[in-house]
Length: 255
Image (cartoon, rainbow, N blue to C red; front, side, top):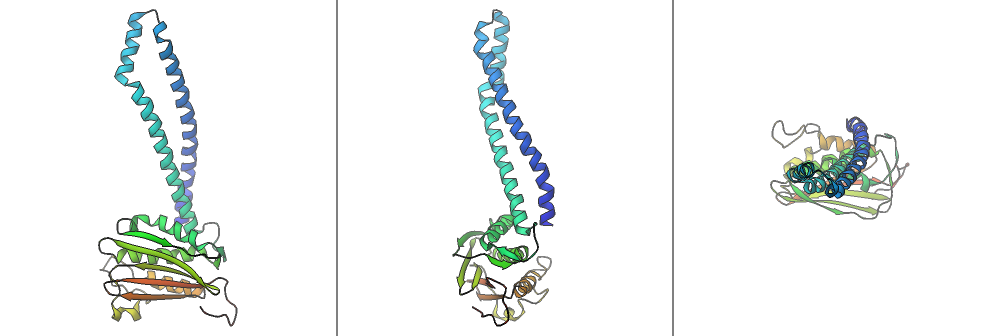
């Protein structure tokens, strides 16, 4: 779905962006023409005609229009740039160019995922990135981005008013970790054993399917990794993804 949306948006954004380049050029030419007329206005012999032109200038407030039009075009270009960035984030999130195993920059995946779901997060939490030095990791990037999305959205939903979400990464031996930590409501001890069961949820009816953590657990397991959770009711929760840098052969060590 994300890849399809990115593709459908990319084409119209492309020609709108191209049209804006032409529009900017035309507007500059029109400004030059109007200013040439204004410079030569005192040379007009017909005083009545000159007065009418000066009146139109005053009524339209040419100087304001000129400045405002430049600002409008600039702001529109910035908006287009934002749309293009969102499209790129969607492509990075879905790894539209490949669904195969490849060496992936996990920080780039975290950043693009956060941008895609920013509306789910920005009203609930400040996001603090504490990234360590990581090598590229052999994985299916689009699947890991789905895990990141599930964990970050869960963290946001666990915060009742305003809080903080930490995105932490690091490395131990030949393993890397990605940790999503929040200072939300935490998880009751009696729910720990069922966290990764399909359809298990503590959210109200209609507010969640209970599949997010189950899917995430299966994806991490497919990558020969581990998904760990630590939580304290009333103080917050941390989910930690452990992944091998390279997909292991028989006898590979755990972190």
